[in-house]
Length: 228
Image 1 (cartoon, rainbow, N blue to C red):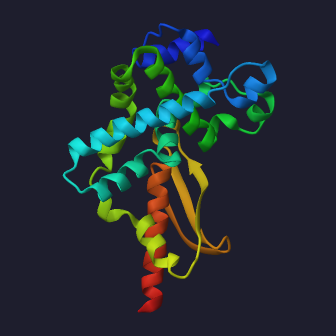
Image 2 (tube, one colour):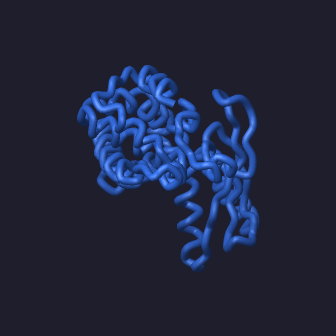
Image 3 (cartoon, rainbow, N blue to C red):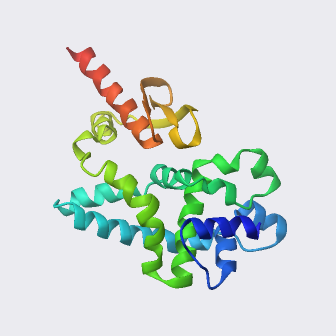
């Protein structure tokens, strides 16, 4: 496994002083429980804080917007769906240490597992060499993805849909119902459901986030048609 993790180091041009930090960052709790070792959960905590600061600073420098817009945008870029997209962009799942059960249940593709591992990786790099070293990862896989949707605030259909239904105390949930294509050119299909019963809309996208936005857009269009 160490040889595999050296590939990850090389991909980001990293050189850990303490290689055990990287091993820990890739250790899921299921593996840790089976082998009586430390999981990556504590590193997720520090990685989350580092990401908040780095992404927040990046958005502050890129966007001339008020605090509320920046806060909302940062939340979008560090949510589980976005973290999953960052992790998938360099196939982080192949480097994880998983327990037998988690392996059988497709843990290497799970959104929560990948998002947590990405945060842990950021945390490990920060603990090993400090804040500036983290940008080797951010500049390669995070900021380029953020740049593609940097000015899409007006197209935040998920927030618009949420605002329309929350006055009626309705709940919305999103799910990815299918994905197709090679790893470098995936297409996702998302569905938005109200109150776990009513299918509101479905949409496609190159990322899960884009697919969910398109599902919300479809739901808004259907609602507008029903009122006309």
